[in-house]
Image (cartoon, rainbow, N blue to C red):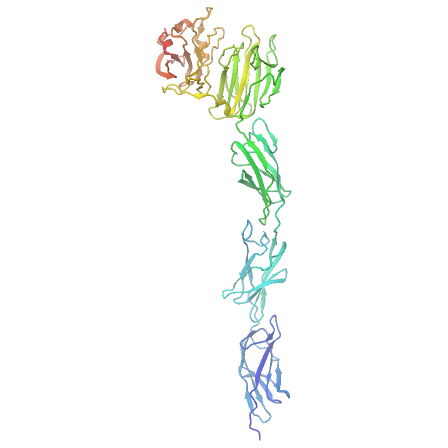
Length: 621
């Protein structure tokens, strides 16, 4: 009789041959194989009974070497399992192995996600949307998966790396090897400990690390002022918002720089064309434009070639009408300064001329532009400006009217020019104008009246200045009385400035009054040192016609200056027909200009005021 128990059997392996993870399981492992192959050793020829949690699930006979193997015919359920084997010999003696615990899990993980693909390279950084273009060839990919699962990241189905999700299921991956330029399809596969897996949706992106081709600035367009059209690099323009255009990579972003500072950006169209107009006006001066082009990925091209412009919104220049440079007569001529002069119309009389001539007028060393009587001539500046000055000698015309032309060529101001000396000896009489409301000036017209005496030459223009140069040699005087803010003498500009002589005093010129000229001098009448050799008298209407409303005082009255040139001035009423009666004129104040005192007299019925020098005012009646 055999009463000796067999040797203790063993469970040596539990083999998983299912799913993505296969091989021998360690005690305590998790598997997705519901019918794992169990193997071990027992006494040769003994019967091996395999139990799970104490319940037999099968039995086999150990071979002559004591080896045994068992595969369940019925699938084991998901959950924890505890295996044991019992070896029973032919006498019925038995021995039991140690237990082998493991867990079966056949449930796939929840579907993982790719939540962000982060670009931290180049000029455009941040999270990429699916389908985006990036210049980052090692973007950081992040998402969620089953806690502690293995996340396999693939590109177009090929694994590029794997990471372990943390205890909350978060995972992050950055490729070690740069991804190539082109389209990429990323996926994340979560694999749990049992080998069950789930795959994320695809995440598409395109990698582009190539910079756009060099962009170009091809032209700028001036649509302001008198001269419009295309501009090339190096040109000057009066347009402070020129339209700049060129080419760049299709659909790229074009960034425009002026003197190194960004001033705007636009998108190139599908054909690579782009146009940019500044929203803020460019300051006068030199401007050096460059552009760069950046694509959707943020790659930046090299800078374009420089495109230079000089913005001169207020044109500056001077024309002196040199006969050596421009001999002869003409009807329409553009001078080297850019000033265009043309005859608009002529009267058609026997002595009327339909042309202009350059001449020294019989005086060696003197050059000037001769404008004939009964003509209208136009002087168009090369660009818009804010002020003009014209030096002239009035020889024979009458009713010389100047019309200031605005930006669109329309008249914005007109007045009669004051008479000047006709000896052609410097300095010339000056007319200057700057619009009080800041409107730009494109030029002016001269309307020379019909013949007054024996000559057919009405006007001689010595020079024309425009822009900043018009104020280069003139100072501004101040009054000492609130009644007056502008007075005129021979060298007074329209805006109230006077020429200062080398000793710091005011230049003063007192021509004799020409009684044959019914309009007299503009805004100022200088009393003669002696009466002319004829008996005609000056009438009050002629004096007042030379006035201007609000010239001295802002009270809507017509105002004229009367200035004496001799201490022994003739009585004013001797110079007037139906002259000024003392009782009809009220004194409204006194003003001192450059040391000379003036009384202001007002005639309310006429709506007129005279500014009268003291010694003249004393002989008013």
